[in-house]
Length: 146
Ligand SMILES: [Cu+2]
Image: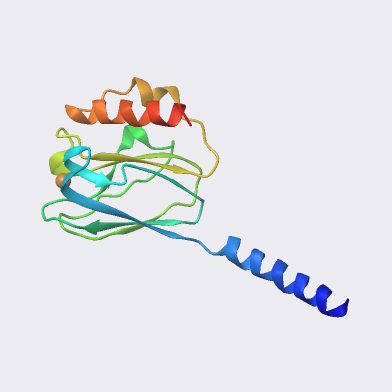
């Protein structure tokens, strides 16, 4: 019985440490993917507050930058340099739009959901340039079906 109790205690400790560990999620910046040319893969992530997203340079001439209109109020945002592999930590719940600065209108965008959040109506109403709008609307309808 003592052994069982100790095992349970160990299991609980393990569970606690696991959930306390922030994760790092990798997103590839690519010239072409399954969704067509100029993509992030994946184009949608659900992460927990404290997690980090790392943008990996699979192909050249891309970056990752926040989209002011598709960020929670007060978010300072960031702009990665071209070909820079940046790691961005997300502490606050909400939805965060990401764009590749040179390929924004070509639809190189993605969306990150942090923690518990509801997609704001302003996101859906916002018209991103070129193909980016179509890709965002497609991501939104995918979220709705979940
Ligand atoms: Cu790009």
